[in-house]
Length: 481
Image (cartoon, rainbow, N blue to C red; front, side, top):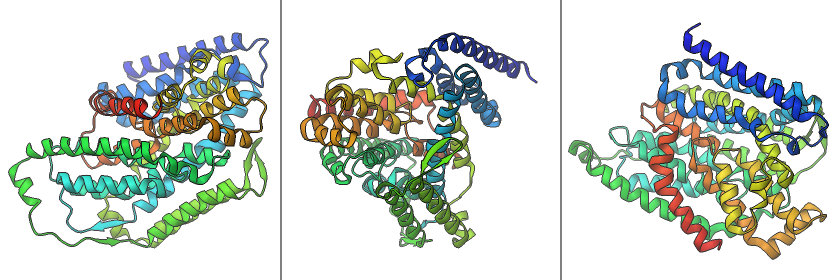
């Protein structure tokens, strides 16, 4: 074992022992059923460790990270899970199991199905990565995202976009703006677009209510698209003249191979909708209640993914340069994220009674909800973050009122709060690579294609801060003040 590896192992061990000792002390006399109100703020340290590992290792130790990122993710997960379960016993074990069964496994099945199906659709023909062509692909993807999901639209269009820009030197910015628009902002108009909105649908928000977010979505998408077009024009002028000349060369007509996979995408949408409107009952898996509709949905998703794999020719996937590398990386890293995120989410769910109570207590106006839900969704899972701030609004305005009735009252009397939570959770998932699952998948596919993507902090400093934050500030001023 190298000196560096021993140092890292020692660090993990020390943090784990500290968490075990501190958690054990914090749990004395605490009600076991409400962990969010007794967990100390520093129990989120392993989650911070995962984020910093994703941000810093590829920059400071790229070779180590490439070979050992599964071990790093597993180590952070164990640093949290073992002391957590040792200190809090059965309630903690139940939370870990619940996160795996209710959140992580369905998440992985959904993105795995969309990744497999999207990789079976090959758009043949000449696509030249000029600013006009690139912007057109962005517009199409943004429009599709609300109907086939941000993951589905991203997996469908990222490979054609990369092929169109194959000969260009400057293309990382195009992938980043694709993440902004197709993997996030475009998913705000239906519950099918992004998990937070689907979660709201399951809890009683009417399916067509999200259409009312069209003004905010159009405003944000238009500003980001216009910004991209002018940025890409500047980068286009820096390209080699021969590259620009190729854009005017004779074009091969566009055609689609593997078109039958669109039927499988329809199956994915049908399965997701079914799980939201059909409620036949529950079963218990390892002590966790899971709806039969959710198990049915997951079975359908696995089935259509298998059909896509076996009915799509190998040649189509080879033309798409399909590999399992990106989905493997997402599965491993998000396993670490889902495991270590538990204390942070539980503290948020505890509201003003948890260690993050000061933050929750100060969230009162629509603008606060927009930035709080969005800011946390940039780093936490945006679906439970959305639900946390929805519950905060309901509990503050309609205490004791049944949830579905309270949501209808919220829409009728304080609709701007729900608009702020919904748009914040969806839009600001674009702020970091881990804000939404397709972000990391797109990044991995681009890097596999040889594109040098910005680092975790480079993404934030070079793109999020100068592009998205001013747009979101204008959005706040226009819609939520």
